[in-house]
Amino acid sequence: MLSIKMKHVMAVAVMWSASLMTVGAVDHAPVGWHKEYNDSCQGVNLDKALSYLKSRKLKPRHEIIVGVIDSGIDTASIDLKPALWTNPGERPDGKDTDGNGYADDLHGWNFLGTKDGSFNMTSAGTEEFREFKRLYPKYKDADSATVADRAEYDYYRLMRRKAGIDSYIMMAAYTARKGDCYRLIDSIGHAAFPEKMDTVTVTHMASLLSEEENLEMSFQAILPDIMRQGKGVTWAALYDKHRKDLALMQSRLDGIEKNPDKRLLMGDDLKNASDIHYGNSCLDVEGCEHGTFVAAVIAGQGLGELNCSGVFPQAKVMILRAAPEGDEYDKDIATAIRYAVDNGAKVVNMSIGKTCSPDSAMVSDAVKYALAHDVLLLQAAGNSHKDIDATPYFPTGRDRTGVKYENYMRVGASDIAGAPAGMSNYGRNEVDVFAPGVDIRSTTVGNTYMYADGTSVACPVASGVAALIRAYFPKLKAREVKDILVKSCRRSDALGGMSRGGGVIDAFEAVKLASTY
Image (tube, rainbow, N blue to C red; front, side, top):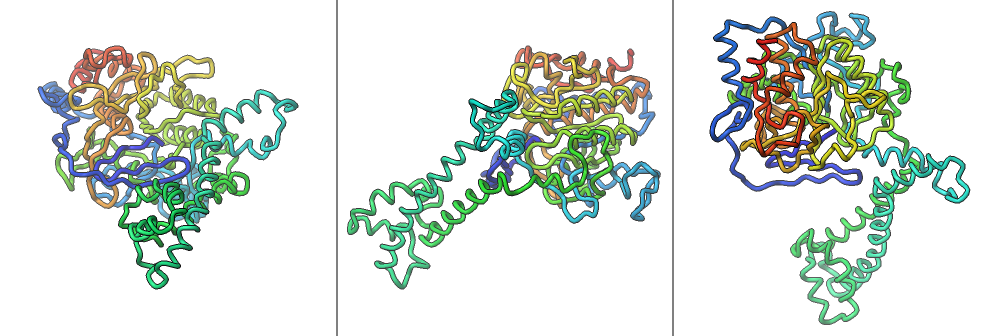
């Protein structure tokens, strides 16, 4: 799952660690700027689009369901509860009332949970790490000169390198060696401060340097740890953190072979695209901030904060929980797409993406299935500031022969000035349009609000505009809506050459163009 860069509190997750960063006060853009268009806000020009539709006496002719493939949702949110899609054939009775294979799927489905609901997966490593771990037992002791399947072995080595395993092993070994330094300093400290070791600070311990010459090298070795924690930290706390960090590293390295992938708990065959009836109905799980924010950008009602309404509040959001913190599994994305299609979604938002996809054909086939049923899919372009014309990025939105599907769009992120956001991926061929994705305020868990950046935010802005067009012009096909959004975008020198459209989505120009189709 793509990370949303949260303002004030930003969650940063990587393969081996998770940290929480508190950001100081900043000056934010006006709330709702992404929906405006004027000299200072290069948003999607929503008000003018709505005025144009009203002047033409046009009204939404169909209720549009937007599938949100993400981390889940806060189902109690006052801004999202009225916007939730409700399965008309299902009752909350523990049974599969409508016979679609999913019991109690009132508002969508969770493809990351066990059938009995006892476990819901919230985090996963990178796809590269998972592939390395899958092949590690087979190749951990392999002789490269005699290995039988050279292609698979080379793939294993590539995944090992991309996952950073060797670097992590070196870091763990270095951390273990620092243990000798900690033990020496600790023993001398106990002799110098026998009654105060629970409260003595690192600064007090450093005062022993002049008396104990052999401490200098040990202090130099642990200086980076001291700098991270601050000189005012107690020695006991610093030493305890070192021991815990080392134990965690060793546990993770041991777990490469000993700990199975928790995704296997779901009970389905990960390599079988037709094995689709797994998971549970729980959508509100720990870590659903990302999905809540994304859904609210599309269809938030603005009840808690008026200006925080979504781009198209009339849409209904169908929640497909298929993206843990980390890289999503291909099987879950493919199955979620098929669920969305089968249950009436006409637009699907996917604020996801990764650089490795072992079962990309499974997702490609699901996109083809969506095309056959006239469903438009929008994917975030990614937050690595890379040209994805040159760097593979998944899902690709292409069929097995490499031809791009007509119902698939990639969305980059632009800022308030209409320039490309610093983090956004780009590509003249692989990115279709840009949409506002910087300093966007919306709903998150617990009826609270926050600012966020990222293509994960830009994508639902575009999805909201797509939903509006499909509601007002229901005869348009998915490929035509994509064509309209690309052709009508507001071109600029700043975005020229960075996407097919070369500009920012403009809802006003889009509805004008749609009315001519």
